[in-house]
Length: 599
Image (cartoon, rainbow, N blue to C red; front, side):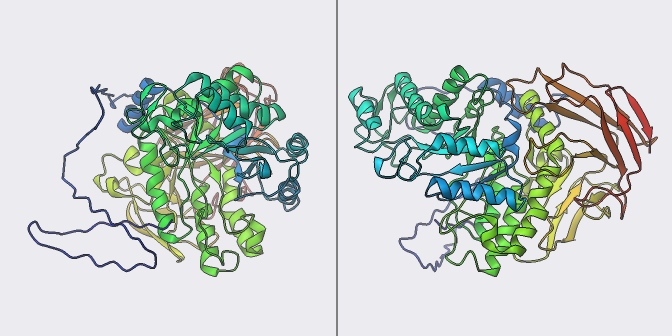
């Protein structure tokens, strides 16, 4: 549903103010929150004691003090695992595919149109007339196992929506009810009961995991209606454990998969869920921000929401690109087409890149050739070409407690202006992302850092000085800047993340400071990071020397023993944009041994 927020500035104490609201929908609720500078209040109606944990951020090995603090939080609550490589590709989702043929036809068309894609999602109602629960109605999904097999043959993964509730007429409801596993006579199961969690997992195992479904979309994990509020559950007070429902139900799935499918779905568990709780990152669960509206204000607020959530310590976030509640004219509205394009551009630089929405189909071809071309060129292609960079950054999440989508204050705490920037962020150590949040072709932003060392416009190679700036932003281009002293690694164009290894690898060098970037590679799915390799790329700015270190690690099946690396020293008119650089400065054949190149 639509909502909005704002800040009233320069109000004076003791003065009565009247707020006039005009709305097309009723009833309307307004919440006014008075801020108190330098004061935080923690309050609980049911807490019996408080334990305080202090995490020290000033760790020299961390990228910033905030990284150190977040790493400390994950040390307490659990580390964030490495996702399989496919998870960092593009996810196609809508509300909902109506039958098996419709879903498979969409998958075939993506491949025929050469729109890169790694996963497709079956939202709710696939149970048809059988009743709410994890079961396929054969009238509309006659052979779900074959459907999964067909998708796999096209190198596509399937995620399926599963709720924690069951309809009265289903065996799921009867089984849960007979054993007292339902919450207070509701249709939701009691996640605080270990046997109930196991039963919930077994339902999904039988319907989904046994036929090769890769992941679950665990919807409504608040749960809806709060049947545990002011009631008891298997562990005691429903109020005391009110917000931990999502943690427990995602744990039910991750525990089961890691136990039963250690060489398949359980290697690196992924699930999508609508709520979150401290420590949920350890279950492999990614939060999505719920059923948001498809308008400019909602889009703008998603940027701040993504940054604030990840500042809380959990590095996995997603959204419904384009908004879930969309206008009735979404397929023909020129303004919505611009919004959708800009939203895709933002989504390509968030942890999980997924489109979703209702009120019609969400496949790109439904919006016309121009929108399709713009989205592919400015969002999907960059996501896939940057996969070596992105995957390596998420390796740091798993091993260092790093955060990939980063509020500016994480890297520029010395610059007080960054603390209030809510619409611009870093993606990894190199890229500054400035989504366009209105229907214009320019973007005003604040470029952090200070000093005389300029950033670089990713698209043109032109310098951009720190401080207030305005960038030209045509509809098919997301404003991107590259930090001084950065190394950006790009692979070839891909139709899916497993299509081919990153060979040739393009390494773009941005002058202005010394830097090191570590390329991480593995087979994309095996549990842990033992079967993997790393290669350090080290830039010495004073002597313009790039050193590519010897390959480290045990190796993995499919590892490149040799590869071509194209080195590009970026400057105006050279090394800009998403296209491979036509004439690299240096091309080398890398065979795993240390080599240094003067640029």
